[in-house]
Image 1: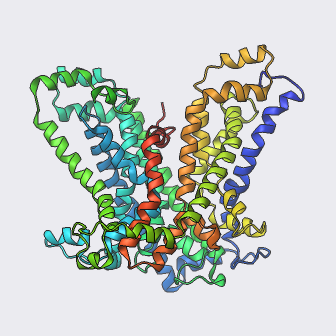
Image 2 (image 1 turned 30 degrees about the vertical axis):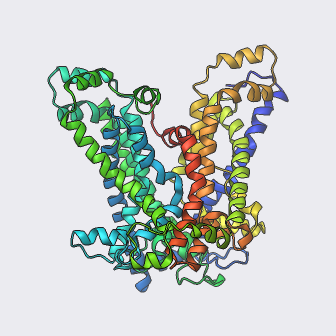
Length: 309
Length: 293
């Protein structure tokens, strides 16, 4: 449809006003995003701009197949999938539980909701630094509490696996609020009459949940799963803040950053900016996100059709 | 209490059920709910209170027992962190980046969103799709870096701000909201001979204010909290936002946990204050556009 605000020159105004937003998006976001594929075929590195030099698929070959580094990359890929699985399932379950608890008419629910959401707005830097304080010092808070249960853990300072799992815990702690508020918004779209009708029909609380609440929560379930699957596959910033680049802990997103911006060895030197190689890693991550994301999307759509018709 | 809960759009709930429950008095489900909520509350409030407790300790006190409650209530850490962390300079930078980027972003995104929502431009559906696919695409990190290097904007404040002038989710939220504004207004404005720009500014803009506020806050929080791009693009201390400054500070004073805790608290404080006042907008920003239908 055309704008009703004049023809000729005046009719072009809407187009003119679309341009700034569109150009900014194309030049600084969409364009660079797609150009990652082009860069992955070059040996671009360092801090000085120079013409692109194409080297075919050499970056991919090195990333996936060459030597010990390739094995570490494959492990990083598997670790990324594990991270995604743990974060998605646990965050989903706890977020749903929190939302169900807060959807009751209980005093103080607003305060609880505000509290559980707080880490989301504090951002990764503060999320990470708060937990460093708890997870690093020996005899620190978490160490002491676990000690009460007779659990020994070196937490972030311990083995790669232990550090990885603690980062997973912090990731869930930090983002639970998002899952929770999306579920809460979904729960509030369910009319009270339906709960009431189920109760009159003699349904127990549990039956009420599985036969009324759960099917009607379908849109919120889909949204939460997609957001959290894609988000956790791409997330790595808490690893940076909590443990830096440590062998045996990296996820793919961190490999991209570390390779492309010279952070693998701890010290930054400009010739360690392996941008082409990093771009290849980035495309591998994109393929993983795409396959997992599209599969999840497909399964969730089928589930929606089955439940909602 | 109850009336304020009911007024909150995110916590409406079954009135009938409440009346019934009141009649029965306190039931086990309520007790159980509170027990679970308290456990979660301890997991969320605990770390933040512990942060405060640590900030109020002296270093020797912390070394002796990191967990015990502070006995000295030493506020010296805050003054020390304020001086050593270069806090005022970082804060000015962060405010500058967040404010400029958010303003420019909204100025560009608003007319774009109106045109898509109202179908004023041909190919509006393709435009919309461009912003939808953003969620799946590879991160733009590396070519973006090369672009800014070539533009000679590496380690400049202008270059850093340029990175934050797009936000596809914000556009989707705005389009969704503008679609709910009745179209009759467009016709009326056109008949009265209003020009397009006057229509945008005087008619649509005021009606879109809630969505604009939500998107503005969402975007500003993103810029405020950004760490990775600050790590990549800014090497001069004079340009650091607080996130980067805090990480550098951590590297230098890494073992002085009470000092670090004080710095983290001070840098979190503006966000917490903002959150207290704008909670409704912030939370709706994270749910808006995420639920279809």
